[in-house]
Length: 245
Length: 192
Image (cartoon, rainbow over all chains, first blue to last red; front, top):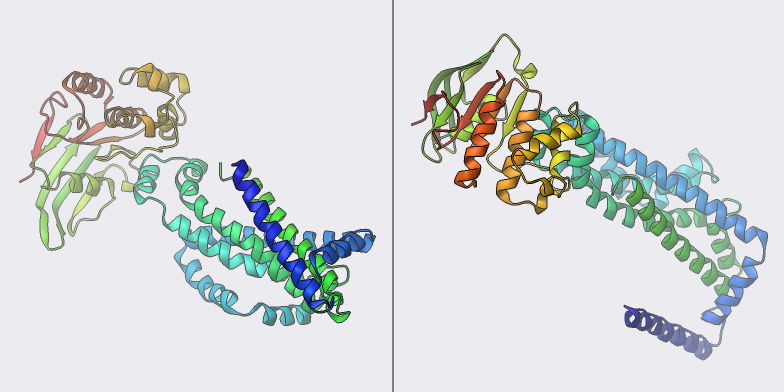
């Protein structure tokens, strides 16, 4: 266990060294800033209140969007499982949402709702079909024999949900949440880069692009990756505590 | 209460399993369905519970509508919640009964130290007995047992037979079994 961790750290160190070496060889901070410069940029950005405000606003908005997508996805999956007509009605919009490029949605949302709520809507739209399809697949794979047993013994709805349906749907939900956490952050920040709402991580990335500050870009990107990682861990923990026990 | 079967037919993939079966099940007249393996005993029990539809014929319920009839089944294969213990499994089907009472009932058929083990850690025979207690304790109108004595040794079989006979409590009792001792005074329905 300990040796695996050391091995991973060593591998990361090798890549950082290669990155630093490449930036020294290229010797142009606009083309490729090294990890040292990126770290300095991160410290510089982190010393301003605007940076923390941007991070906070982005996290709040993407979390809100994620939760909206999660709740709508679960509720719609339950409705589709229960009512065939609902499933037939909702299947076309789900397919459309799943296949339309995020950039098209971004433009539409900017026109309809404006930039401030952009990352909320985009994260929700990205998360919703993933949660919906996976949770529905989980419900549909529930053991028919247990469903029959629950029905014949007239088990309570909450007992059936907890002991018959949830054990079947939980693994599907867990993997969907794990994937959609990262997707919510990626698409939410991409949307912010296009829409540039004030005080957002995406706007910071955009500013680093127009000022050709590659070190700032890496600093913002590192921040986005870290937030996405922490968010996924937090969501997995919360779900495990709440429903996936 | 009565359940009347009228000219029931059922086939699977062109093979006729039940042909033109008519029979009346009545309260106070337990019935044991007999017949060779694969003759359609399980299919008939499933038709009675509404889990399968006959190709033709009717299942009529005297006095009550089918949806209102409460069945308490013991299936041929184990159908318990694997992550729960024996007591909790019975409690799910008999939620108005206290845990203490359920424990007392279970003790009649399974060792005390197995009451709170997850059912996935119990032997096949013990799980079978948990299912029998679950069916017996569930508030029901009809007790249906599909080969309830499968996997039990002779001594346990006697205990289970006594337990079932003492707990029918006026309910309609329908079972399939190769063991003629299953229910005292039961009528036979022989499938051919």
